[in-house]
Image (cartoon, rainbow, N blue to C red; front, side, top):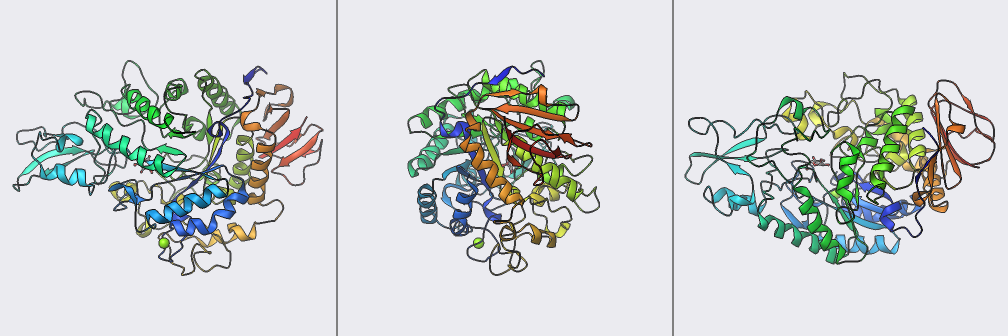
Length: 555
Ligand code: GLC
Ligand code: MG
């Protein structure tokens, strides 16, 4: 680690280069009609609290028409809001209100697959093998004497095989279709220009409505290797790209043509942006996705998966700034989302389970106190780094994962498809606590209904008991976001500060602000200088910064 400048300050940054983007998981944010599932009216009624938090934009996980087999990531109509969440008019109203509060709106585009209830898939089922209707999806004949075996050995991300066999119109057992996720989520055939046209239309529909951009779901999965070859054990065990042995469906080269065609569409509009959900490594490869005519941003999952420890953080941040910088794109930073264990809980266990697996009763339970400290320190560390930052609803409350949710409540298909072996992602999707005395759902609604029950421990994390309380996680987030903006850290000049780092602490300087984190176990002496914000309320200039605390200090 040396003190070379790794990020030059940007003169007039575009909004997305520095934005703090807050992810709303619509079914769990706020429930306006009391049916136990969050909705757009609920969001609208709570928008002021997001303005107070200081975020620049909201990314909505899918709220489109859907049978909800994968919580809305199974879309049956890309242009309509699901009645569960409201109407298209509700969305228009929400968009207008958000704009008036200075909050941009990003919607989730799910182009890898649709719901099996989508009209295109229903038509494909009714049509004959080899027909243009079938060609919208990935239908293949099975192997074996009577086609009784799946076309290859690919496995679903949610467990089990990635192929399901259909019954043809005449009642006979027929072809198989590919679903990298649940059997209710058939993969589109991106070799077919009609699929391109279909999604171009969807993009324009939402752009014309005035949304500020898209988060692109499973952006790394759209293109499959020609001939759909079997996957090898080595390929299935890593996200790390091996040029001599590329994965048959993650991160195929063909994705770039698709990205470029979308970028052209976005560029016809003012100031819109796309962020890719692309689980590809190494970072140097991911950076290719954000070349000037491709995505604006991509989630930095390498960062998300980095433990709270000095050396790995130095490496991933240096590598990110270098890799993304080399193509002129901002890096992004993210610690939590609706697919991973909330970071305050992840940092509270010895060995975090693999992504998508979750924590259930009977497994190692997080050390709550330790997780809170590390989680807050990690956020304070992250929000000082230049680039875009993504927050997941509830993390501003320090909300932990629900790690004791019983199997009978679990709805993630991962749970059922693996027969409970992987408990899945419901633990990070529990509705938010708004008011400590707001009944069993803590003010998520007024009826107490809740699609996933909140644990009693959520009471102490409720927003109303943190609002205006010095030292609360909510006030910490507000302060961090406000100062980040004031000091232009999102577009600032970044370098490591070895002169302020020790064996167990790490420091960097961004626009003259020193960000210092202590990984412990010993306390360290903070440099003198005005303390702008600290996770440790008791810290004075030149005082002792305890283990698992971070501070921003004006040099
Ligand atoms: C993405 C989403 C995840 C969903 C999957 C299938 O990874 O983030 O929630 O289950 O895609 O659409
Ligand atoms: Mg509702």
